[in-house]
Amino acid sequence: MDGIVSDVGVGVKRGSDELLSSSLYNSPNSGMSSISDGTSNGSDSKKFKVEDAPPSRVLHIRKLPNEATETEVIALGLPFGKVTNILTLKGKNQAFLEMGTEEAAITMLNYYMAVTPHVRNAPVIIQYSTHKELKTDSAGNQRAQAVLQAVSAVQGGGMPTSSSSASESALTPAPSPVLRIIIDNMFYPVTLDVLQQIFSKFGTVMKIITFTKNNQFQALLQYSEPVNAQQAKLALDGQNIYNACCTLRIDFSKLVNLNVKYNNDKSRDYTRPELPSGDGQPSVDPSVAAAFSKDSSSLLGKIPGALSPLNAAAAAAAAAGRVALGHTGTSGVLLVSNLNEEMVTPQSLFTLFGVYGDVQRVKILYNKKDSALIQMADSNQAQLAMSHLNGQKMYSKIIRVTLSKHQTVQLPREGLDDQGLTKDFTNSPLHRFKKPGSKNFQNIFPPSGTLHLSNIPEDITEDDLRVLFSNSGGTVKAFKFFQDHKMALLQMASVEEAIQGLIDLHNYNMGNNHHLRVSFSKSTI
Image (cartoon, rainbow, N blue to C red; front, side, top):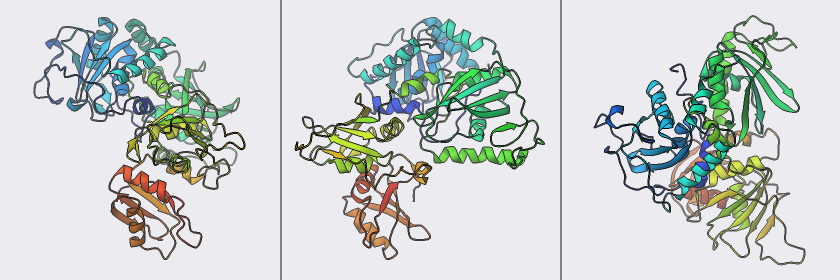
């Protein structure tokens, strides 16, 4: 088992498992009680040994990273059976995980003694708890319970529900070193090199063939050993390459060996660099192939929320990936609640949500003006907007963003005055993503304190822009022009102030028909 890769980050922003965590529990202490197993602050001041406590179905997890979510903690236990309760102590970087049976807990702990468990690429310590079961305050722990229910529903639909079946699925000999990979929901291009980079975390990738079948991008990928194929399938099946899209569906192929004739962007045999490219395509030598795989990491880095595949130990993190999408459906409509009803307008929602997709219609609810329905161009854009904006502050209130059961936003009947609460933006010239392959697709980032400004007229100075953004009710902390002065970075004192600045000043007329373009930046000044 120690061949399993326990750290497989492709090194980019948010994984799909975070979508659920951010939508279900963006609270600092999710109903945590003060129970502890005698450690303080997750430190190692007292060295624990597994033998210190007898076996228990409650496991005590220490040294969790500050930003670890309940979903990620649950994912540690999923491969070994049903997880029945969870309690996280955020201030102490600790958590308690209750498994359905003591056998499942024993299997889990034995496994993690051989393979170091990781959460967010940081090693964590797991041991038996002195508690025999978790008694959590149900009201305070509601959000964690909602996550558990969602995970249980997924487990019921085909995930192993007992420790024996979980360990058997991990130990059954793999039938083939060749995987058949189908990419669902392909919102961004996936290349042979991206696949090579993700799958090589689990072993030596020898050959890849890509093709389109039934209008779906598919690939056959051959490892040097069947066990590597098994580990990759276990960890990656159901995961998203990019946030909320490009979902991997992985099966073993009936083939046990691939015959690759050409090295090009459709097929590659990494063991035979001398192969011709065919079709007049440039041949790929090993050094170029190495450069390609480096390149693909920057591609993953540019695309919003690219997934770091979860470590192989959390085999059923695939389940967390599916849970993360909540009720997927095909709806592109979002329900936004806890809005500041004195301040919010359809236009302000159009501008903010328009950072993550093309907003078609906005309806502020007549009888509940702190809530609104927002129709995006498609369900992928709705997922992107939800994952990035849920839990953010807009007009001093933390907004909640979820998928709506509505398929469309209805316009008011003709002649009916709805006080301007509904607006149709279908033909707006301000949509950022109308052009296929637009660079805007590569520059979608979570809300941040730093804003990227573009389309700045030549005669506008740093002071002009500082005054403009200060007037939107914030403090400009730093500013930097790009070389050509048409673009700049501007840093506000907080993310909330930057959100406000973007809402107020995106498309602001700077004179001579120069409309300022504002988006969130991944850079800091």
